Image (cartoon, rainbow, N blue to C red; front, side, top):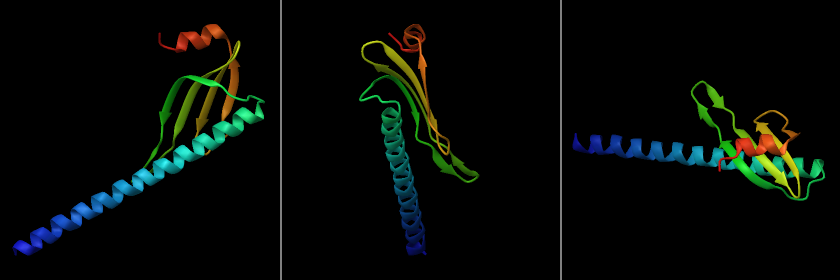
Length: 110
């Protein structure tokens, strides 16, 4: 009887570990997709590099009801004086739009 309890405990631990590893792999794939799409968006707007002044990133997760998509919101500064808002939600095209310096600095904490 004692061995049955140990078997259940070990099975539960292995199942939890498997689910955790799958979750990490899913988030790593999301992060890779986010980075690739970000670089492609910069290139599409003829921007060599941009400073990320503020970033809000939710990598998403799978749930019993489906999945919660990833979301990326970034305030970008391209020297000397261009500012952009970059938004990307999973399964949608990313949006990059120019914003004023005042609006960008209002969103960035000091």
